Picture 1 (cartoon, rainbow, N blue to C red):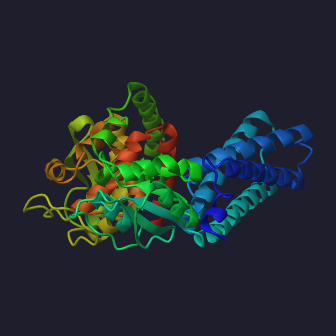
Picture 2: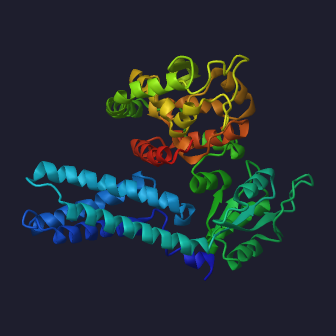
Picture 3: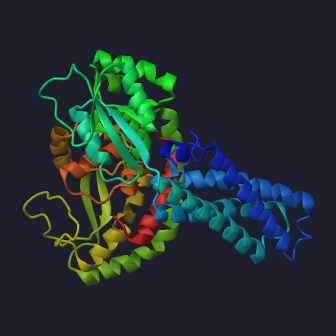
Length: 460
């Protein structure tokens, strides 16, 4: 079976088939569990059906908020992501329905309903997603690039070795400069637009990606105009990276791209909603963690000499400086010679500090910054002014990360490993730009939910 034939039936553009599957599975899980409950007299037939339907729809929504999106090909998820996202989404959906039933009925769900619903829905979703991942993993997305350009080389580096993609080739034109870099993959010399379209069609290419900026050779333009007649999808390099890697690459931006996207300080209406979200969840988190502060303070003092808390100047919303507060995780003489990038296995970190950094306990006092309005729960991590000035010179559009308030956790934190280099900062910026462009309360909830397994895993 070719990649095109294998992929199309399983992944629609917006994942409608997956939404239907999750909703139906949720309905079945709740309906069966209610039927098995010895307290079935409490839930007469009409109520059972209504509750089951409600759980199905809520489950489909919670799975997407937990990160199990369906508009991309499902095999880009790891098995770990599938399991964690399924568990978080299923439990969240069940809690919502349970609260609703508790407030509208005399009785609450019994153990049969709890265990049955969570097991049937979770196992069903994990099994189905895993089987699809296994199937699609054998049929990688076939790519064909237009243009043997520097941008094409960077994109080839990005997809090279990624089992989710298979690069069929790169189209060259007679209009290319002799200095144009040569790729390490198959190059196709354009004879005419029709022959290029037939070549792409005959090789079962799933997606054609244009790697040109503002100047596109005439031969390429003519080929792009013909491709829709052959049922071939063509997108630009920036949109490809945004859609399939969920980041916005600063490597592939130009002035035409900049003017085609909406990047500006966050709208007041969203800031108000975001602030309300921060206050509500921030206050709840503060109530839960404050009783633990004396214990953490005692261990910090026992582990090393120095203060319990550590303050540091960071750059916030629209470039405004503020003082961030953290539990001290390093020795007091950590920066006697000036500001230094923190690294993994940093020798300046104390024994208890190493555990706090892995589990992000050291960040908990920043709830105070959130409640004061200097930070948000979700957003780009605030950086030190010394490093900001350095990174602005090295990375295009670095200042754009301050178009939204900084956060305790963010899209970059759940999508990219801990970094301590300029290249790491560049990759994190690309995730931050994706978040800024698509900022919404739904995305914030998704990030918040996906942060939980990272903390449990001890990942930073």
